[in-house]
Image (cartoon, rainbow, N blue to C red; front, side):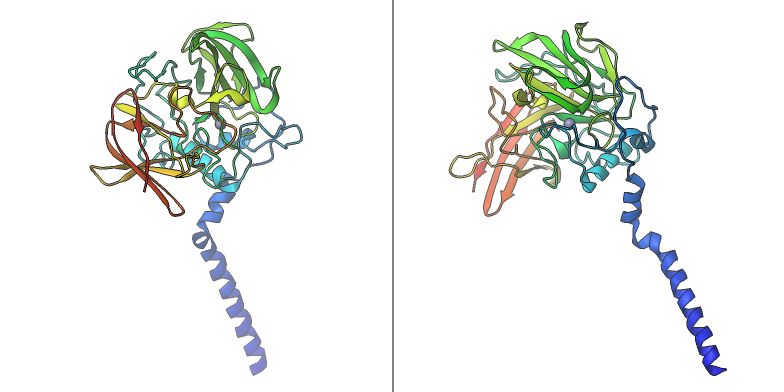
Length: 375
Ligand SMILES: [Zn+2]
C-alpha cells in the first residue's frame, strides 16, 4: 500500500513539474517565440506583375518574404542570404512602419515611418556634391536606407552579400517614384542586360537618366517591386510613380532596393545612393575614409557617431567591404553616414589595436568630410 502511495505521489509530482515547465516556457523563451512568429514559409517563385495583398502589418511578409529557392539565383545578386538574425531585424523594421518600434532607426531622423522633407534637388553646395535625385519613396513612408545594411555593408553578422544599394523598408503597395527624369530601359522580372542576368531582384525597373555625370550616363535601379506601372521605353519624370513596393525576388521582407549606377548599367558600376539623394531638411551627410597605417582601406569596420553635446552614440555604419562596391568619383570615401542632424559629432572606430577618431561639425545639405586619424 505504501509502495502504491509512493508511486501515486511520484506521478503527481511528475505531472506538476511538467505543468510548471509548460506554463513557464513562454516567458523563458520569448526570443524563440518571436522567431517562430517571424518564421516564413518557403517562397513560391515570384510572379511578375502580380500584386500581393497589400497591408501594413507583418502578415504581408508571409506572402513571399522568404528568400528564393536558389537554383536560378545568380551568386552576384545583391540581396541577402537568409540568416536568422537579419531576418528578424527586417521584421523589426517592418514593425517600425506601423509605429510599434524604432529598433532599427536609433538616432536617425526617422520615426514611425515618417521623415522630414528632403532638401530640394538638384543640390550641390560643395563642388564634390551631386545630390541630384529625389528619394524613390516619399517622406510619408520610410525613405531612409536601413542603417544596418548600408551600401557596401555585408550586414551586422557579415553574412549578407555586400550591399550594392540601399533598402527602404515599407509595406507592400507603397508607391515607388522615379529618382529623376529619364527613359525606362528595363521593367520586368529580374534584371537582364548585356552584362548580366539577375533573377533575385524580383520585379525591377531601371531608368537611364537624361542628366549625365562627368560625361558618364547615370542609371537608377528599383528592385523587389510587387508591380511595375511603366514599360520599357517609357519616358518618366522625377517623382513619377513607376511601381509599388513588394517582396519579389530574394528578400527577407518588403522593401525597395535602390541602386545608382554610373557609366554602365551594371551590378559592378554602383555608387553609394546616399551621396545622390538629398539629405533631409536640417540634416547633412558625414563621409570619410578609414585606412590602416599602411594606407590600405580598412574594410568592414564599424564606425560610430557620438553627439558631442549629449555624449550619446547616435548613428553607426560599417566601412565598405573590400570588394564589389565603388567609392564616389569625387569623394573617394569608404563610409557614409546619411541624414545626420546639424550639430557637432565625434566619429570613431576601433579594430583590433587600431583606433580612429575625428570631429565634425555637420552642416545642412552638404557632405561633411571627417578626417579619421589613426591613434
Ligand atoms: Zn538591397
